[in-house]
Structures are given as C-alpha cells and as structure tokens.
Image 1 (cartoon, helix red, strand yellow):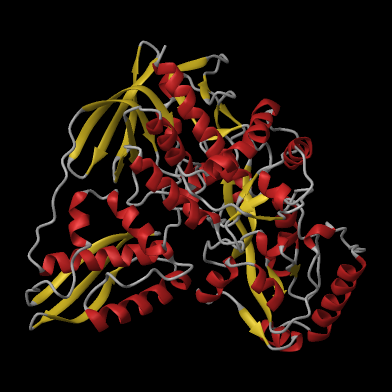
Image 2 (cartoon, rainbow, N blue to C red):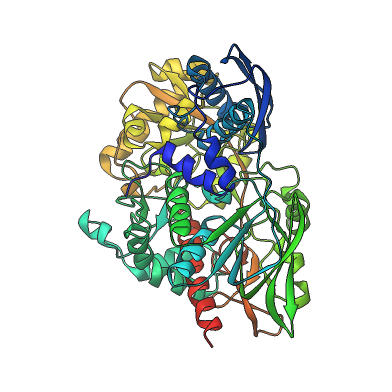
Length: 578
C-alpha cells in the first residue's frame, strides 16, 4: 500500500471533519462568486491564511496574508503552489512541494477553504458534547497514532485528541528511521547484527542511566514492530537499512533510498487508525485528566466551541516532550538557555501538570538532548543519515574536528567548542545520490554548492588549501578503511568524497529531544512516586522517561514511540477487559 503525497494530504484533511471533504471537491468547474474570499489552513508553525480574488467567475489573484512558516521551507512551497493555482484556479492537481509537505498541505487547505467560500459554502461548525469511549488517547503524534491503530484494530472504541491543527507532532519532522536488530531486512541485505549489540549500544549511548528493562523491551520488540509497520495493516516501507551515530552496525530502517521516515510513516499510521475506526479530533486540547477513586477515568477537553468531557475506561498519554517549552527546558537544564529547538510548537509538556493529582513519578527531566546538525537559525534538522552515508564535519577553518558518528552529545559539544560555535556538513554528489532526504534540503535552498572543493571553500569563506587537504586525507582513510585521526566506524566510510559537485550545509546544535518524563514500566503503565502503577493510566513516547537515559541514539525515538505506543494500547485493552 503506497500513499502518494497528495493522497497523504487528503488523509490528513479527514481529521478536520466532514466539512473539509466537500472543500476538496472545489474546482474551477464550480460556479465562483465575484469578490475577495479568505481561507485558513494549518502549517508547520501555525495557521496559514490566504485570500483569493474572483472576477467574472475566475480566480484572478491569490496571496498569503498571514503565516509563520520557516522562510527556507515556506518560500518554495508558496511560490510553486500559488503559481500553479493561479494557472487553473483549482487545487486538485497540485502536489505538495518535497521537503515542505506540512507547509504545502496547510496552504492547499487554505486555498480550498477560500474556494469553498467563493462558492458560497458556509463552513460547518463542529459541536462536541460529553461522551464516553473505551480508550482516550491524548496526542496524535507517532505514539498516539500507533496506539490508536492497535486499540481500534482490536475492537476498542477509541477517541484521539490533538491540540494542534495537524496530526503527527514531532514525528512529522523525523528524518532518520527506526532502529531494529535481527530483522528480516538486515538478513536480506547481509547485515550482521544482534539484540545484544543493540542493547549495549543503547545503554552506552545513554551513559547507562537508561532503565535496562525498558531498553530490553525496546530491543526485543524492535524486529516485530518493523514487521508490524510493514504489514498490510500499516503498509510502510522500511526496506532501506543504514548507519547512524552510536550504532555498531547498520540497523536504522527507513523508506527505500533513505527517504525521511516521518513524512512517510505518519500518513500511513493516520490512515490505518482511521480505517480501524479511531475517532481523531484535531484542535481539541485536553486540559485535565479525570480521576475517580485513584484511577484515570477520562479527560476534560477545550475546543473553539467550548469544553466537554470524555469518560473512558483507560487513558493513554502520548503528548510528546517539552522541547518547545523554553521555560521548562531552562528550568531543568539552565545551560540550554537561549538555544533554538527542532521541536514543533505543540511540544510543551502539558501532561506533567495533569498527572500531579495521581502523584505520578517523573524521571531524568534534566536529560535534554541537543541535535548537532540543525540548519543555523531555522530549527530545520539535517538527518544523521547524511553523515551515515559519508558526509564529514569541518569547522570554519576547513578542518575535521570529531568522529562524525559519535553520539549527539559528543558531536554537539565538539561543535560548540569550535570557532563561531557552528560547523559545516560537507559531502559530494555520490552522497547526495545515495539519500533521497538530501533532495528535500536542496529544494529548500539549504545547500551551498561548489563545482570544485576550492570553489566551495571560497563560497564558505574558508581556506581552500585546508579544505582540499582535509578531504584528501579523509579519502585516504576511506581507501585504507581506517580513520587514523578520529576512529570513525568504517561502515560509515563507504564513499570517498571525490565526485563533483561538492556541497555544504552550515549547522549548529539545537534542543531536539527530552529524554526525561513520566516513569513507566515495561507494560507502559504510568508509575506513581511510591513505585506502583496508576490504574487505567498509560503513556508512551517522548512524554515518558527512562528508555534513553542521558542521550538518545538516532533511530531509537521512532522505535520507542511505535513499540511502546503499541504496548500501551495492548496494556489498556487488557486492563479494560479485567
């Protein structure tokens, strides 16, 4: 089951309610009233508002009047989509812009809404009333959608509540993949790996602060979750297996060609959850978790039309981390004051206040990860797969300064010690050809290109002789299959950087992942401060703590959200059947 980008947009629209489905049928064939009309859609950083002008029944102008998208992402999407829309006055044949999927979807939805207004169609207002269900899930990110799919597939009545205008959360922006060991895909590709090596890599990466039982569950369930995600129920493609930082062996599973995992997986999970009958409600913010005799009994929800209550037999918290809440980040890790973040705006740690009444335990809240390769000043994360496929890091003087495949904390610290506290990812055409994700960066205008290394150095304003010497030395290491300077894993040194043109991306570290959160056990049951499970309360994903310890390995987040999201659903199902 393959989902096209345009089809993925239509899946996402389902969550808005039935009124937007009619908007999608708006075309230039329908009669349009003359005048100026506005429409609103949800982008990466909030709402996108557009206006269209209709004269003699045809669209003559279209412009964006309000948006808060990242310029490097938004500009290509805005220019391309608006140009195509003005040609036809229709959105049905306009595809999303690669590398700007969410912005594109938001703009297209806004144009659809404006067209509907031009047709005289009133926007339907959805009214929610007090209701009941078997399982209520707070948050429609990767963990929430996984839990919803699993629970609904087993016959439960499921309501998923998402405060943002789109589903997916931080999972939308995941560019790497999912770590798993001893999988059929590894066997097919001749990759030798084991659960024990995966376990040790994860514990070592987390500085042995991880909860060993949670890590063991992550490792033991990893091959199974890859099969589950690739089953007809979900239909994901995880057939490409590559190398990531902190890993001894190739074990990060991703779509063919190394495409970004988030943009691929979220639409599949969303479609699967809807297909199984889950009720997914966006712009519905949970403001409290109900408590009855010590057990979780449902939630209180706020939306544009007011408030309502959902009573439930079990509650699953999948609200994500708090990387976008600078106050909380600084509270738990003062050294990160002033840092940017890769997180979406909804990652604010809302759940922690809601669980205080249950005396829920929090663990390792000060363990906050900064990602080393974030495009300077934008919050756009460059996937670790670029390094895994052969890119190197150089400082402003053109010199390598670190084993590029070290864990994120070590690489980030090395960058921050360097001149200007920035660095450059440098790679050649062979690396670009090996990884589809790089094409998205290119379309966003993030690459600096040079026909030669000297040309590239000139554009980066660094010593050309030094950069040329650095690349020559590194290529020698590739040839000898040994990094004599920084001991980089030879498995990530399969390509000499010798195929023109050459590329660079300026990067800096930014807040990326919050490893701490709610304390859970291996059944995803939330624990109280006395070490007991809180009845009917479950959690999964970045809102929890203990899985990653002091530092999360790239590829372990998607494994975490999917594995424990599924476990949370199974545990909730077992609980309500008692």
